Image 1 (cartoon, rainbow, N blue to C red):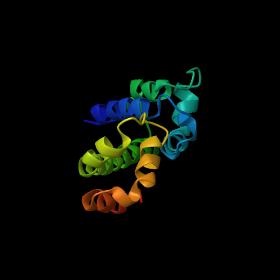
Image 2 (spheres, one colour):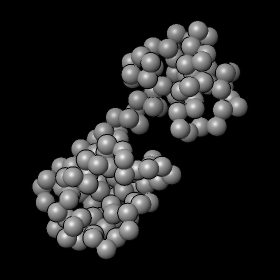
Image 3 (cartoon, rainbow, N blue to C red):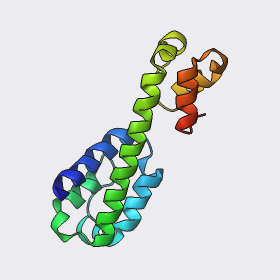
Image 4 (spheres, helix red, strand yellow):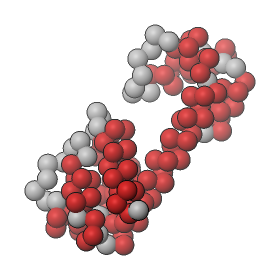
Length: 136
């Protein structure tokens, strides 16, 4: 079970932050801080980026401290909450995204900017979902 959760985190963080400055993201920093001893001991030769440090931690999962395990599990929980919130907004705003933002390339907040620009036209369900999740 622990192995599956750690591998899930590796994949999620690599997918979510693979194309950006992931080292600056709070979740990445949280894991780096919680696992600093393990990273220094087992992964010091690993080039950071593209999930390589997480893969190294995965390879040494039987040696992780409780602090490191907690940092990893907490990051997983935060990613799950974020994914649930984004799924909720995407479902509630599907029609608005098609109507007003179909030509907008996803990423770097462009869809949220488009939604904000069209705020007065959004349906009530979409507006409420964005409020519920703190996106508005």
